[in-house]
Length: 540
Ligand SMILES: Cc1cc2nc3c(=O)[nH]c(=O)nc-3n(C[C@H](O)[C@H](O)[C@H](O)COP(=O)(O)OP(=O)(O)OC[C@H]3O[C@@H](n4cnc5c(N)ncnc54)[C@H](O)[C@@H]3O)c2cc1C
Image (tube, rainbow, N blue to C red; front, side):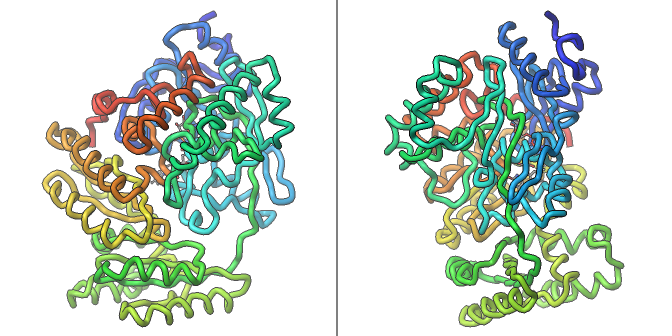
């Protein structure tokens, strides 16, 4: 049978406009698919898998919000848009919700907020992403400091495997696992295959677990089996659709605290950074973010845009930025600004925590202030969140080039790590400007260069710069990606990060689920930097 509208109830598109649209995500890359399909339900997905199995060379790459920065949802073959139809909220219960993967996070957030619930691992791109993309990337964000990443909130998944059937996965006790291992079905094969990998290599895998608080790189084999519970959801999370297609998610949700108070710390010298982070963390902020001087300068330079973003009036906003303007003219511009948000069940509780943290920082002689109003708080948080868009919207002869966009090291090593990172970046000033903003409490930084990618000389430095930054991150035992995942841009470096033995276990994992390589090929295993470089979108 042809891949035509007769195969599925949903739409099948091969027109130029659709193919062009689906050839880009938020990454550096452009790859045109052969076909884009819009399955209406799980049965459609099952039919697509069966179809692709019967046609050599074809594959299925899921696309949801398309906000990924790695090229994870791009493919030369069939792209499966799950956002158009598989987007229903199925159930909200006491502390949980069941939802289809294509639901926008922003809509999900509104619905669960009606019951005073929250999925706290939302990314900075929460307006652009879906809940399925969050699971497949193991997304994290500002609240991951306290609440962790998406993996922690996935209780159950339904997934269509390569035999074209949907299965339900969740945590299993040893006796339940034994029953699965006996099954003479595709499900049984998958359980046996992964059980053998994680049990035989238990010590190696536990040692391979990244020593940082956030990681989206590789397959998280170390999280599947703790010798008591066996949980394959923890392998699907963050696997970027390379093991199967997620069709239904049950999330655990939290009850958020309602009062917040922001402490702002202006650092002229980053030498005491590690001690300051340690001191602030003692008071348990719910978020602990940072941005650098370049980001601050950008906000000042494009003040009218901030007026729009903050829905403020220019005079009121001018007053709000007065402290920064004074710093600028008195040469007192900080090199880094840290934002620690404290929460509580009452305003007094949140304020008390912020004041205690502020008092504890006195001994470092750093300038601090507690935001007095919600507006003031909003100003700082918006600069942090919108730095990427400011870059994108204003510098028109260059474009954002995420390729060292998500590095993580332990916060303790930041005073040594950051100057060395800036030294590397400084050597490439001729080709790019960049901002460094991130989740300082987790040691997770988003370095976003702006480059003219139409120029061959700019493109040429990308692999060179990636390798230098990766070497530095790995020297400090960090991870190449805390949240954004691997995709086309980082898969080629997974072996450098985990070593040959662990990388071979990633390859075995892929073979257990997907021996025919029909699910999102070239991501997680089998990627090459040459392929990635050959597919950079050469536009600004
Ligand atoms: C400005 C900006 C800021 C960002 N900030 C953050 C951040 O703070 N934290 C963070 O984690 N990420 C961030 N991202 C990256 C990205 O937005 C998130 O990871 C997001 O969760 C991806 O969701 P999506 O719906 O757009 O997924 P997509 O981009 O559509 O897909 C992501 C990957 O998941 C796979 N996939 C999607 N749905 C399924 C499914 N149902 N079954 C199997 N595989 C599937 C895709 O094939 C792809 O490999 C940011 C991106 C931008 C542009």
